[in-house]
Length: 336
Image (cartoon, rainbow, N blue to C red; front, side, top):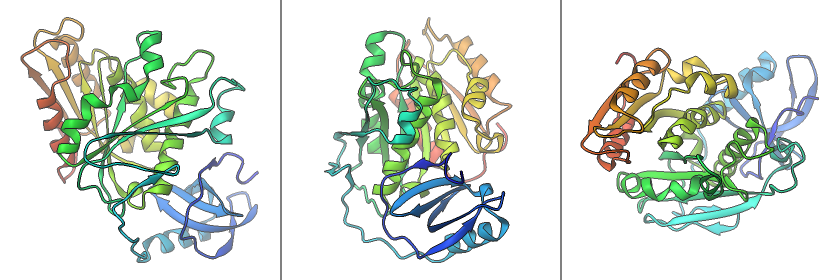
């Protein structure tokens, strides 16, 4: 069916009038155009929004969608507040945790595992946050070297980044389920992690008018840096503009695995700057390991930067600040 593979989102507002859309095979559906983000189209039918690849539509519909997307939008009212799943999120560097049911589309990826039920979003907003405006968003991944780390989830790592990030104008996000980190959960397939992360994207897109036009970076330390390769793919294939990847204490290049699992496009990777942070006395991810990672990612990504600090296996706040500033700079990402 035309919408069978679409990801169901939560309700959106500000829809246009309904029209008949046709897919590449000639099947039609009455729906309302909502938005275009990259190559991802959001439409709504009977009050239920769905996302589909732009290429899924007929040539005439693609032209219509692009025309509507380029039309001058009605500016949203900037209330300065962000409501997510019925909860007003606090600003100024506080950690907000919001929990909501998993959608039917996400639950399908559990292969009928009844233990996983909800999505949990950890969000930290800077003091000057305005939901009407595009922002810079840092998406965090945590290590999963033990059952305890897996249960603690990605949100447990967010405070290691939020102070430096929000002080420099970045929103910080991490996403889990009621079981903890959705990546490599027992009895759950790999594509479940992608479904959970993209449900988080959908929830924030619906609640935050400027979200889809924001700039994104992914970050992780040690095992979390390895998961960040996959997280980058999750965000990119959801239509988000990922411009940076921070790898702290990373001893393995997982670009190949991320490309295979998430189907992220090579052109999207070329837009991403990679900052590899290494501790001079780190005996887990040695300087040589980090040099190997930096050299390995060069062929797939845009600019690559390796920096070494005086210290061991730890997250360097100085390097994190430098990376975020670098990611935020305008300009192309060609060359080293």
